[in-house]
View 1 (spheres, helix red, strand yellow):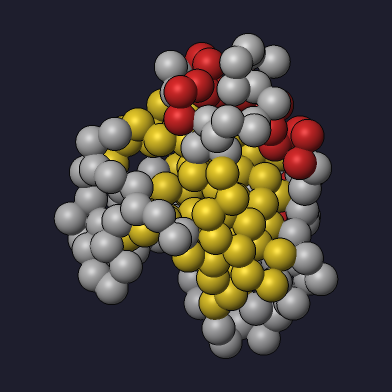
View 2 (cartoon, helix red, strand yellow):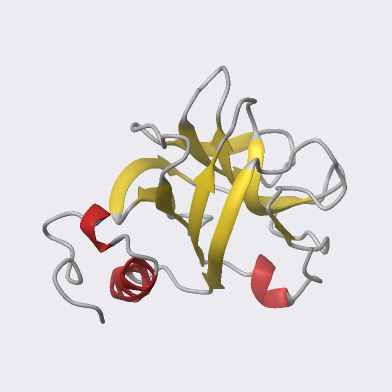
Length: 181
């Protein structure tokens, strides 16, 4: 866990993670701030089991703290393969955008968010308070910053892809497909 900082609960937030999973159960966290009831912010998860086997999800908790706002990937993240997962959280009037290897792969409207949690950031889990929500797999690098800028996200995606040998996974139209930033 990483101690709370105001920047970790001030939107927009962009999260990029290089991960290799071996999930067999659902709702295993990659990174997030999801603490005790009433103190939930945002999470990036990989679901290895049902109901959405192989899918990635990005979640926000709504301002009433009564429901999650969730973007679910359309594509699977295969176990054993290193991937670059990303999410841009831009409430209350923006979207949650979910990226796999630099390709937008899921989105939903984020009309509200509570964003008030002071709990720690969990890396390799979505909650610093639970023992059964941890990622099964490996994290190579996590980068989090306050921006919803496409060019910022693409630059960091390019940097991470080239650093970790994943540049071949970037889509053909990505500005860093053929050269590192």
